[in-house]
Length: 214
Length: 253
Image 1: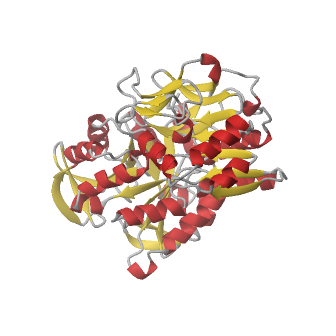
Image 2: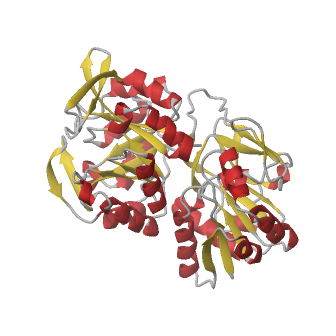
């Protein structure tokens, strides 16, 4: 079982890789974690992880610069139905469109828009930075197994994913309004928070993702 | 609801942990990676390494410390000290840091902050501001561990850094650092109210009430401390329980 962590020059992939390795080791799972920029490895991986930090357009451009990568991801996820996890901007890239520094097309895998955070309370700072407690929208979802209401996850972002179909939102947090925390549709999932930085909650979530058979 | 953060800070020199009182009289106290693991298990909300290595020959020791920490601790890690170039930032982020804190280099060349934010995103750019009160309602930036005055107004500077793309301000009350007398709350509040990005209060924590004051009265959204945790005066859990009892939203685990 190969887990491909897509390397397209966006930030630090080491933490994500180390977190997956830790979960694999502790749970006795037979996954091999591969940080890769090779589309063939991604196309044939059993699970795919797309991290991402920085601006939406930069990440999209970086992904498209790796020749064949978007096609490989599309083939694996939509052709073969392989589970996919987008983290932070990696999740936002699944949207139809992103509105960070202009309008930019996303992958359009999950209908929605990436909007600037604009908390109703002006005392709330942007970026939304720190630990917030998850409010579960779909308690039966296997990605949330063992997490429950009120689990804390680590966020750092200035834009958020607004799903067009509320059914795609698995959990949210409150920050001067509802902010999407986890999305899932078919074999695709995404977290606005950083599971690789969310201590026990994050490792439990990654373990759920590795066991997820949508 | 977003929780307020407690951030222990480890001063690291040549790959070893030290903690200074007013940045002198350093006491060697151990391996930073082991310390980081202790704080991780204790439920610290983030961790900061301040690299005070002087010799350029040993500058890479922090990369090894960061790399080994990132393999073991799955929590946000900020590294500051000697961050002077885009390449310094890239190497720290690749080693496993989530944020870098820029201090003197921003004072020397403010555009560096804009370049860093452009290149790596605001989420990983912390601007560290060391300030002292120089008169009533007047706060100035100091560099070189508080020894060198710059004449720059701390509040105006914080606003400028936010405009340049800083994602967070680490504000140290230099006139309180190491004294255990608490944050300079007038400074903290003036800066926190002037910017729309998160402010971490630092410098002078001696009691758990000081942590409460930094949030409640200083309007910071995070508090950073070294000595009270490092020398075992208080645990992270005690600090969180005290703050929660004072009505501050905390992540209890």
